[in-house]
Length: 165
Image (cartoon, rainbow, N blue to C red; front, side, top):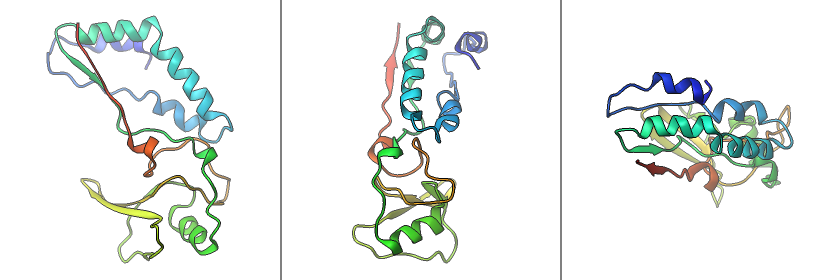
C-alpha cells in the first residue's frame, strides 16, 4: 500500500502498531536479479526521502512517540563464498535447498563440523534450523543475490529509529 494511502488508516489511538510490508514486498521480486541489492537500496532511498513517507511519519508522530524497525535484515548473498567441502555443500543443499531457514524436522540428521554450519533455535513458531554466516552452495535454479532468514550479521542486525514531534 502506498504511504500516502496509509495516512487515512491512522486513528487517534495513542497506542498504535502499524505493520507495512515494504520493503519485503519488493525484496522477493529482486532476489534473483543480479543487481537486486542495488535496486533495493535505490528504492529505499527513494521511499525514505519521499514527501509521502514523511507525511505518513508526521501523521503517526502526532500525539505519540513512534519507533520504526523491522522484523529482520537483508543480506547481499550474491557475494557470499561457495561452500567447497562436498559433504557440507550436499548437507546444506538437502536440508535448505537454496533457502536460509527451514522448520527443524523430527529426527533430523545432525552434523558435527567445526565451525558449525547451522544453528537450531526454538521460537513461538516451533524449532527451526538456520544457516550460520556468509556461505552459499550450488542448488537448482541458482542462488538468489538478495536474501533473509539466516544468521549472518546483516540478517540479524536490525536498526530502529525512535521519533517524536
